[in-house]
Length: 281
Image (cartoon, rainbow, N blue to C red; front, side, top):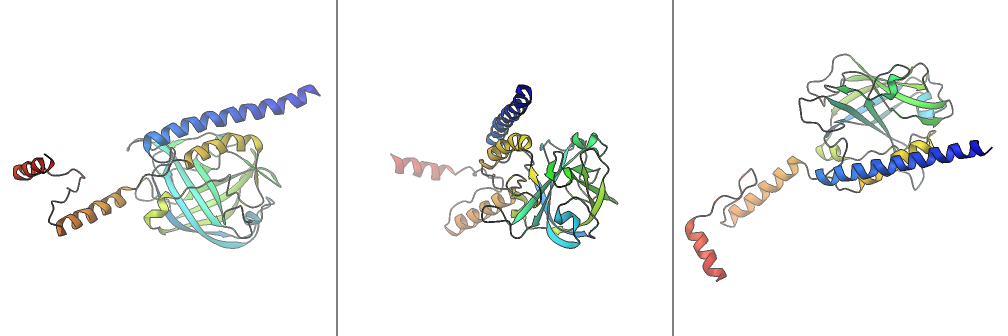
């Protein structure tokens, strides 16, 4: 009896400690970068998920026929400098109705490049670009059928660069180490406006209806996601460029020298510096 009670406590304590360590590490990385610690750069596309209704997972969205329009964010997980390989990430966001006041009106499904064998689906894999191989949700969620994992399997040729996904992918699910069952067709549409690239995705606060997080997984993930959310993302290069352009135009209208495109102020003429020194004396 004692052993049965101690083991879950030890597991909870270990997962809680692991979550705290991950949160501290992610928080440091986020502060150093000034933006999210993982998946710092990404591109968001529209997508359409078509389900013929052939699943038997006990999760309505996977089992019932229907078509859903959502978004797909493609990113490099670590943010290693190119042309280095990286872990590919995809975040599928789908609208969900009737979730309740405290739950977002959408569900977030996070995928990372892994294998797709019985045990390879739990092992992260470096790849050159999106579409180089399968992506899974890595950590299972609790569903009526059991420990549920999802997979995105690219179909056909990959896109032009490392953040361009293939035009079509197959969504599958598996219970534990069991076989994969194909349940939906994912068609990737055009790229979305740039602000969407900075969207945060969180499967803890926005779960797929019919699934729940295992306690050990929640304790491991939640502190890390909370630490990542605490850092406000840095403005992207395009936004900084637009701000510099507006400042330059305003300075030109006011008769001042605008800053250079690169952000550095041009050197001032000697008469201007002398006048400034006289004025401050």
